[in-house]
Length: 555
Length: 58
Image 1 (cartoon, rainbow over the protein chains, first blue to last red):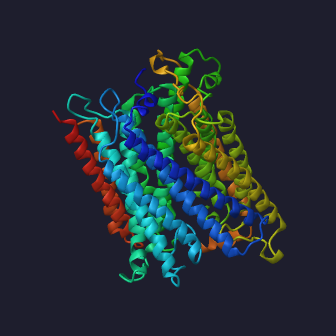
Image 2 (spheres, helix red, strand yellow):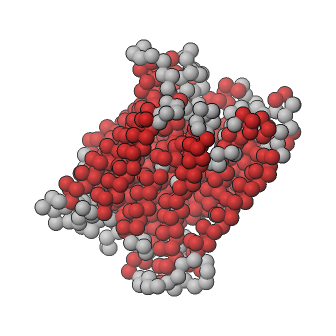
Image 3 (tube, helix red, strand yellow):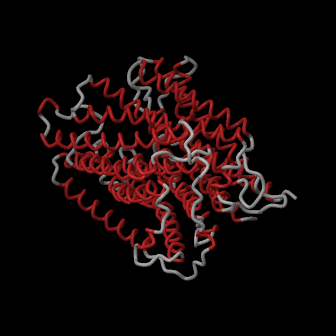
């Protein structure tokens, strides 16, 4: 058998497999719980489910804590740990984790944190996903349990990647290589960013934990700490998504970048260079921020898309060149050559389409003049689900659908269903996100459960929210089915074809030569046109809404 | 010095400058940003050193 990512997964020591599988199962359970909370929230917001507003906020808390935090970070921890253990054996040498005890401790902390987070969402006032201590000042027990959960999550996010870094370093030196492969460097950068995010979580929630224990003053600066953490929570999953695409490209087709490993490493590093400066745009609503800083924040925000789009170009161009070398013809004929028999191909491809939509809408929100007007409207959940669900979650599920069969030796169940579900989820997302973005432009607020305002609000608002609810239900059910199928593939009974794992294509041996690849550049043109279009529409619509006068004057 | 180390040092240097900038920024309470990006800068300096040490193992 040739030396591939998938073949190396099967050589991992049993104790490493158990750790990574435990993380993956935890991630899928967190996703299922989070989706259930999201489904109920969508039903309440659409007016399909009549409950007290507090119950709606409780569903939203479960959704935010489970889906936005624990699903995304359990899954990332599983992927970074699993693929680092495999990368250690790249080019010879043993596979497997180093500093396994750190990883075990970190996984334990994350699981305990998840349990505490869930308990906090049902015990007192709904803490939402940010656990704002000012809103929970009369409920210190909820603050205690909730903050302890996030502090433990942060601790886990520092310990698990530390094991991944130790593992990757062991592949260097002695009689082995002097530099990491592009994938190894990507995993190293990803691990580093995870550790920083873990620290940001502790930095944000340790003060409120200490206050709830009576050991410190009230955490007046918690909101700033939350903004720092929240900024990382925006971009870390996006970086993880692109790195998962890079891993999938190699695992499913054997393709490496046609631009070389060094260029890929530079692109991955750009994430780390551009993410911190862009945090300024979270302060656009701060009246004390000088105008020149706001303009600088807007400009810097544009840069954060550079590594995403460049990595996208690298992957698309590399796949196109190799597919053409394998005999593909026509402008888009190369797409038919991709390994569509593996459901990860569908999930990742749909994720790319959703990213193009999401990134176009994101450019509306990061404009300094539009951000204050849209930040508190339903535009925000409307657009960010294109990222969190349509791009990031589908990509992480794609990554897990490659990782888990390799670790368990069991084949994925219901392959046809897994190939269809990303499209169904995206159809629901299109309705949810489309209606949500329009609702945002119409001024529908995002933080209220009932937007009818006793019949005073425009009737169209309720129609839009009904569409949001319908789209949300489709999206959530499709992802629930996907997560449940993956889970069943891990913990269900062994199938008759379990020994016949997916082998993957081996395009790496094909001569790529000087083949032209136009799909990537054309896609960027489409994205640029869409960004311009959405921005122009946004300005036109907002100028037609009375609230603009207030917003502009206030700004 | 390998490309891995140069890139890691580049990231650490940018984060250091940012941490300093946030620490002395005249507007708002930005010290939290300085702490987080400063810790990140220190981390990437350490990782660069570890990569250098690992790569030169005989």
